[in-house]
Length: 452
Image (cartoon, rainbow, N blue to C red; front, side):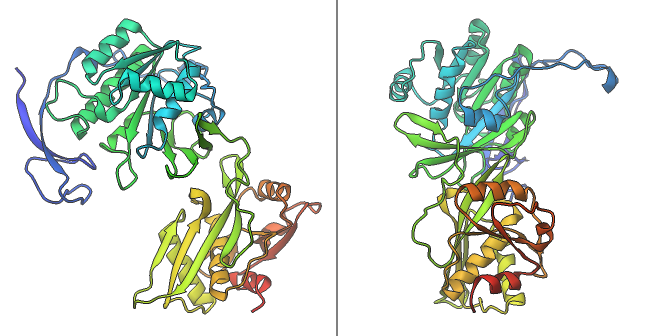
């Protein structure tokens, strides 16, 4: 009989401690250490999927081309890099109610027509899945349903039915009998994910895991879970709004720069082919609003950067950013105060990227600064003008990548002027369909746009 041991495991980061502590030494979270009793016992299901290794030269390894499996959902295939790769483990995370199960059930209906597919549900009964399938218009005649939480029985059914594709919804509800802790704990999630990883590699299956997201926005369970899988996808957005954004934060078989845009309808999540102006209101322009051409993967999105400056009632002004990095916002405010001599110490500053999108590239710096200046001066930014450029600490405007692609997209949507870094104007062709206004410094950009 294997010896049991008791350890205290952080439910946020997976740090193990021999005794209970109020604060986790690993991540600094309070009251997250939970006692777990585990058995150091390995079963046949956890045997290595590879034979005993031997040292070989990289040049002598034969090249093997693996055909990807298309899901039938163009936006999902785009994020995956062209579909699912055989013998891979994929993790899909998102907030409750965001549409993870809906997206997978839609793709399962199309995948099951090509290969044998099993849908393992640890949260819903077969009747509940049937009700959702009827709402989505999915017949599901080729989908095998398995309502089960026990990992040993799930693996046994996999070997019995031999599906090519397995969907586990969700990994937090699955448990193994060889660990005494509750389902969803760090030990259970880590062990069950490892079992499924070995099954995917050893039996040449595609296994898709659904993961819940904590209040901080990270996947629930140990961080090692993201390291074990081949691909990590996040489905983002406000469940009260109709748009969803699917992005890959890890992809061993493709790029992590592509995003997929979906619209939630009564028939399920519908992909949007041309979402360039999806996040534009096209309403009466107001102060504090600047449109910026964002580049996500191979596509350009026109996003509204909204700023609001209002006099602070308290001594410590508030700074809030939604869809834009807060630390980057504080940096832009410091540049505006130092180089533009704006008094922002008595102003509450709020930044919002309309539509629920998130901006990560530094090319949005100029648009953020101009939107703050527009709100502070209470002057409207020209409605047919875009702005993009990275702002340095000295207020200089730096170059941005793939400007020509952004120009072409902006012209197609009716914009005639773009404020860009001066260094990029000479690099562009002379027959551009829009007017480029080159600026060297942030102060020069503000003076060219606003009258005073």
